[in-house]
Image 1 (spheres, helix red, strand yellow):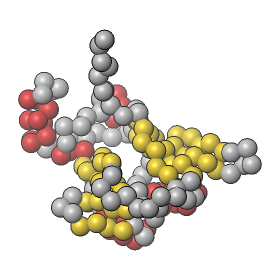
Image 2 (cartoon, rainbow, N blue to C red; image 1 turned 120 degrees about the vertical axis):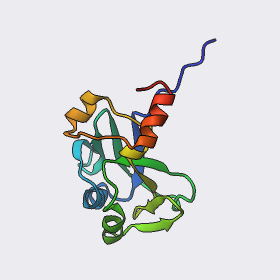
Image 3 (cartoon, rainbow, N blue to C red; image 1 turned 90 degrees about the vertical axis):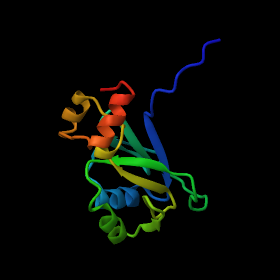
Length: 150
């Protein structure tokens, strides 16, 4: 039987205590478009979807577990130069680990990486729809070329 190939992530879902508070927190750090929301039968905001072009970040009400220690995901941004300062001002717990990681107020661990530095790519059409025109560093461009993705 042929195994399917992993081809990417459609979304990551983060559990938070309050979706409204999470929207305030994440909008203090990042520029994004709200793709949509979902309300429960009682009218409570249960989920919000932060658009990332062909992907999204879902904020879901109901975090109950302890803060993440090693489990994390890498969130790609166009420019991470101000994220540390913005995250600290918004109340994030900054983790000094060689990379830039922080814990949001609900204990979700996020590593922030810059698009220019990675072999991660968005198609020109997706970037255009996001209003972005981004370049790669020479090192990242070489990694992309070596993998035959240029």
